[in-house]
Image 1 (cartoon, rainbow, N blue to C red):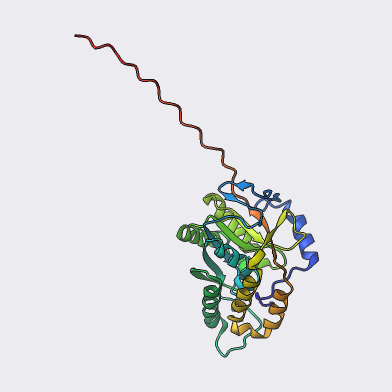
Image 2 (image 1 turned 90 degrees about the vertical axis):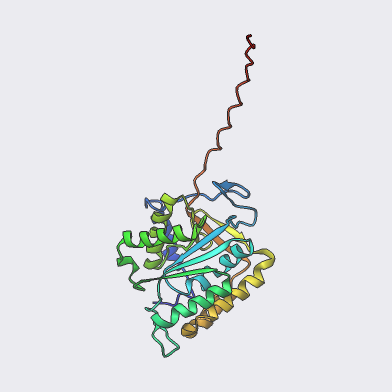
Length: 271
């Protein structure tokens, strides 16, 4: 298994996944909102970053929050959103370990440090098997995510696009199944060319966002053998990220206007 710090999507996987999404009931192919248009209570301004008061990131393992989602999490935090994180595994299945400690013991501590650097205020860690999420009962995963939604009350959930890694696909499906009944939209960080995606411009915050992302990646000391690849991947990024809706916010009809009060009828006073 490759390290979560350097997440790449082979073009063949992107093409295969894009064709599958149009036939998957839990992940419909959806067009993004145009600049400035609102999806329910969430508006997408010209920068492409949805406005949200509280963002919950759900990942398959430690490292995803830094190498893949770090730029977006930094941007959401700078925009004023409260950030929380749920990692469904401890990342113990990584083939790399630069420490003498078991990965299931050390990686949660690394996750805490990386999250602090990214501005994430609340971190939860589940104990599902790393590399085996695809074999976990979906009701169990959905229930764990539903508890996180109840605890953190997000108005947006952020995941990694379900391409290339079966665990990421399982996370995305479980998140959508949990978020749908709660009315919480789900967005995925994806790559250019993915179906129905749109650009997010980091703008003047680009250098700061990437610097924080690099620092968060370095916090995963047990994965230091993969750090050069992770940093090279981050160095290749521009000031843009890519998002797509997995589960958009419902378009809510405007509330009906209250009926005007009936005119008061004054009855004559009878003596």
